[in-house]
Length: 511
Image (tube, rainbow, N blue to C red):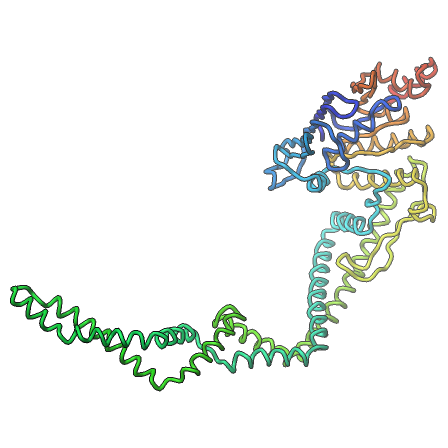
């Protein structure tokens, strides 16, 4: 529930600081006083409307929700803020959140009912509720539903593989030809790991052969006379071993190079260069020799798979048929149990519709193409008239009855409900019926509404009056005496009559 709302600098409001209780909370006031502006500012903190208030904030308590993104645990206080300077920012517990994500977050515990929103009658939503209700009344139902979802998912996966295979089959010749071409392209080169580096080294040595040989020939003049340096060291009584070892090491290096050069004499230089070019092509195309060999291996597996396609197709076709038949049987069983639950649920809604002076709501299960929810779709009719053809007042009352019936099963005692124009343009009798049902619904929800009728206002657990003077709007909580006076104004206008006061007292104290 919202325990506090704070607002600064929004249109005609300079500052608002309100504390709320549980139950039905109603805002009334003369036309143009700012009721809709105030409601819009509250709704903006739940991502439902836009507001340019410099600062607005709600404190929410007693919510049984958990959200790891904002480190929220069940029953933690939640503070949602909106700050507008150069741009509008939203925060949850001082962490920034986008308006879209704010709306998604707040939808876990709040609903905004307005005429353009028909989502409460969405077939999938009603089916989901029937599943919840059926599971609640029949422990075996959840097992049946889980079994259906598992079998149906297997059907979907098998069918997806089959369709992919059938699509591949149409292009099978091209795919086989392409796989063989790719395999042959690498096989003809037949690359070996590390071969490229070895050939590059040979190429480098060949390119430097003549230059190195010339330098070595010149160096041999020194090596051939190195014994003289050894003799000189001995005459000087110095150990010449270090010099002799160094000369031997140099000679060994020179001999190794000469040996490698000798082995290259009969080498096909053009062949080496061509081989390097072939390997360079594979490296450029596949990223490396090992990658090329892995690609070849993958294409070979793919080719083997194409050759087994007929066998795989037969197995998949068999599985698809089996899983579909099993899914259809389970879906029929689900449908039968849903139908029994739907009768109870329809009766419950009609019991509330009687209070709202409506009757003869029928909700039926209609057959549809099987999907993840089964074979059922939901159809609503009020006195044999489809929903899109009933009046807005009838639609509002029907949705209210649906919500009240659902809440009696779900027992959502901490949800927040915002109502838009719920009792506008209604007769006194209809308004009284709305008040009765909202009173019942307020046991499970904290409800916010702008009221146009005295009956609903009299039922409110908290009644706030919105007034405007000198273009400045204010909000105040009304106590019983003030409430009687405001409801009398709603009945008779600015010039309050004694009859209006008497009728107002009856409404207020009858509650």
